[in-house]
Image (tube, rainbow, N blue to C red; front, side, top):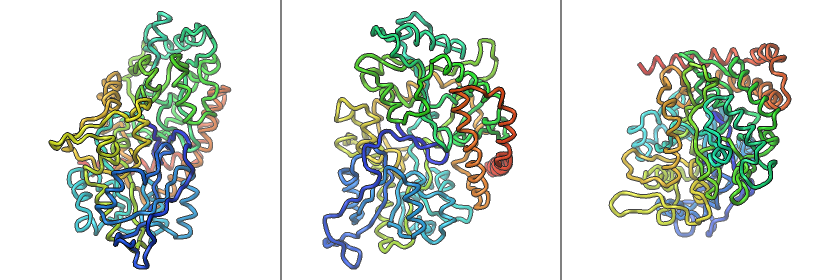
Length: 541
């Protein structure tokens, strides 16, 4: 899995293999009445897609979906610089009929650009039966979609199969065996293992200098994404969740921010110790996600990375090296620690998504657009949105059940194949709970590789230690305050994070840094989030 989360988590993309924005002409000229010569309704749409994803016009499932809806869509395909493109589009009011992609238009933008987007709340019953079925089966999806004033501008997704966390920590078991080392269980043991990886030619190729003991995903200016060492905060009892990209977490019902927490200070000190000893990839703060992935895939049978974070073994290391690695359970901070171990809880953000598809209020073919949207939420279509077309990506067993097929390209791992051939997690969908679909080997592997984390995940108090940001709608005023304050906080905290890890100085600068962080508006944000969190809990009773 190669996503990073927009808003709640930073969107991690693989490679810029495609241009930032492409547009495909349809085969027939547009008639004055908005229809093609063969009577199909002509629509325009923007799709935010992964850089790996092929031209959407090549997707068989999409072509058939357009045909069933009686539409022909002129697609504009965006893989980069969406905020800039979106800003110009919203300012001009020149909107396509449909905008598709995770949180492509935010709740704040629905309010700010009132009048540009169609309110779908009156269309659910009469024109969107598949969306209605999703709302009835999974009422939380209606909550995600509904604005405080009751209007619905963006429709959510539900993809059901994903595990409770996106991040697993992997270690090269072959390297451990080569050096006669045991699996680390504490930070100190991890440090000693990393030193051995660095000094003792762990991969056994005769070059003692080509190992990277530790590597983690790039951070962004907007905060932390998946596959970060911040998961080690779980060693000290902090449970990260969907709002933790900018440091927020809940502990015993109180909203906090780890960026001013002493436990974060301890983590950064440990990471600086590792970096100073040459145990962390020197390019960790300059490499992009593509480089992060490619480095871990090594050279032939020679692995390069000893300890790292990722979604699934073949996704992280490729088919050739995946068997060398295993996933680790959470580490204790020290051997004598009695703190209850935790981990990052991502179930909500992995299985739900907000504002996946938006309809322009100026669309001349509203009913046709609604027909197409409704088709996307048919569970049989939705599984193809997620995993790819029937026949090539999914097998129809003929008895009402389906099975995700291995990649048609045997050199490609299943995750890359999925992102290459379909919209994957970036599409609107409803994977109903009664859909009989056998998952592919990568998803089965994800579940197996999550087992070492199961005890910690099961022990999470979801009522008192998780901020349910996916199901909370902030007012326009509070949304603006949160955004402004978070921008100020990130402008301070993220440069310090990389500086302290690479150059040190956190102990000397910590107290002054905390005071500055509190003045960014962080304390105001904590009060705002606490208010909404308390109201959410009250509403659940």
